[in-house]
Length: 542
Picture 1 (cartoon, rainbow, N blue to C red):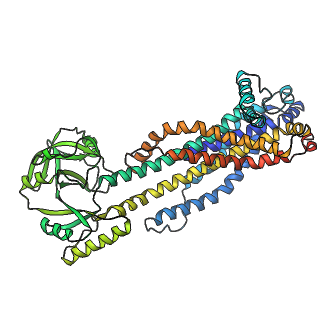
Picture 2: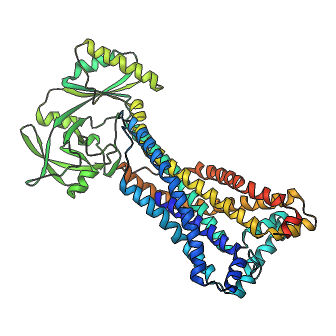
Picture 3: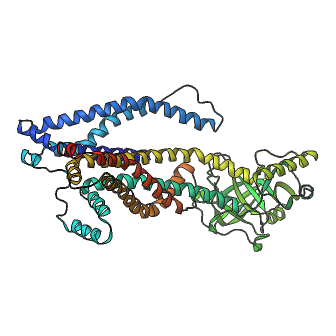
């Protein structure tokens, strides 16, 4: 994202300097006629750009430090951590200083050298913007189509947009990158929300109670069913375990190890996302079968159908892997669950019917009702001298809110960068239209002298800006559609550590169309007003 912003800034510099050089071709011709050499002219313009870049760096450094400190404090506050005094990275400052001075010079070097190498005849014979427009088939085809299907003012605006095709390409590229970034970001947010919603939907319980130590199943079941909102109860049991294949212990992703979670084979309360193989069926009751996380399978090169040795207390036996699930909460600081049918585990180990977790399905419509229900459950268990484990007791809607809050710093950071890129795109468009007004001053004077009114010239330049925005949206929309999924997959894996359920935000295209048209309208307003306000005398004396 930062590189995208830097690239857009480079395009903006290149476009502006190229237009600046084009506007001063007559001055370059005069300097060449008076004996100025290519090196001296290039040195003159590069020094000008260096001074502008130096001013930008001097203003940007304190603003960057303040913004970085503020955003760091904001993110740390989400974790109840004080940010302390202002601190900064020397490496970041050096990158900003050298990048802020070097990148503008590199971006401007091509148009500066091209203008400095211009000979006297070519410089003085230059007649401004797009003097060769209409000399190729595309221009003639565009004029023919415009004349037949749209009114004169719109046809003129469309033709003016294509008069300087190099500048058109750079302006469109700037807006396209901004639009692509925005739509990909919106799709990333939609994918995060879809992933969380799907995970919540796979958990059909409303509240999970963690017991420590385990309690008699019948006792806790009867206690939970006494609450009026409770509709169904399911019991899970957890056991410490070891896993190996041959004489080699299996590698694990979580640093806190793994535990066996025994649940009913026909459990209606939970079903994880199965990436390979299958989940438990009725026929698995009494069979030694397990479902592992896809992360562990990848680390140990396991395949569906492989057999591994599982140690439960003093018993070590062989179990068959029938599936791999995707672990949404998988990270370096979590206990990795390994699922097995509770009927098999109890039969195999001759265990008593104990409860480690209680899954409750209740009549709950919103998070407030969920909180009230959970408080009632806690009170009922505490009255029976049964304390709940605060680390493993969760309410689904509250957990959904908590997980969403964990994503908010990432999404907020990306949104800020996307907004910055959109602003750069708007500045680039405003600069392009302003330069067009300057370079077409004589044309404006001619139009005013033959009767063109204020609102006609204003509409002409305003429509040119809107066409820039519309065409950039038209091009960036299909690119964003095909680019969003691989980028969302990559960002989800790198930043969030999970594979996202992809969803392209269909409203993002509509949002971006509205944003880019408003951006184009704002960017084109002042150049259009400036053009319309010019008098014939001002234009012809330019």
